[in-house]
Image 1 (spheres, one colour):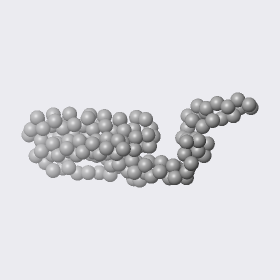
Image 2 (image 1 turned 135 degrees about the vertical axis):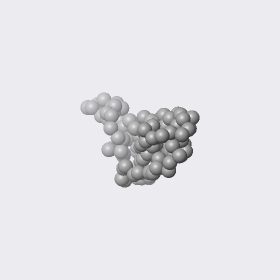
Image 3 (image 1 turned 30 degrees about the vertical axis):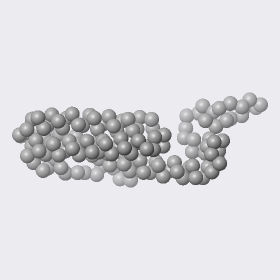
Image 4 (image 1 turned 180 degrees about the horizontal axis):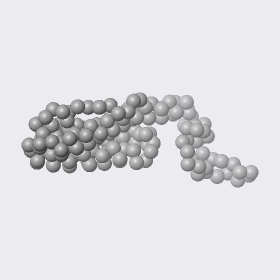
Length: 147
């Protein structure tokens, strides 16, 4: 939080907004190369944003597959049950990665890992759904968000 002056009083700003709005003041007290810091933040956010969109597409595809399997003639109820267990776990990983709203900046090592885990679980759910219905249609993947 950058320091703010009100007359002769100096205090830490508690405004809730991106520190990038005033990067020199917010980051310059700890970092000598503010341009590098802001470019690094941008790089992390772009990388994590792409991974986030891929995970969201996978989540939607898994939900679509599960809904289709529930209405179709399911041949393996146990596989469908496994599918339904994977989806909330994948959603939890997505939620965990984005609950703090920094688009990965606060946790650049783990945010992509959590999102990749979410994508992996949802794709497993799709595979199990296809197996349970003995149909390849649940493996169809849509892209719902464009970067």
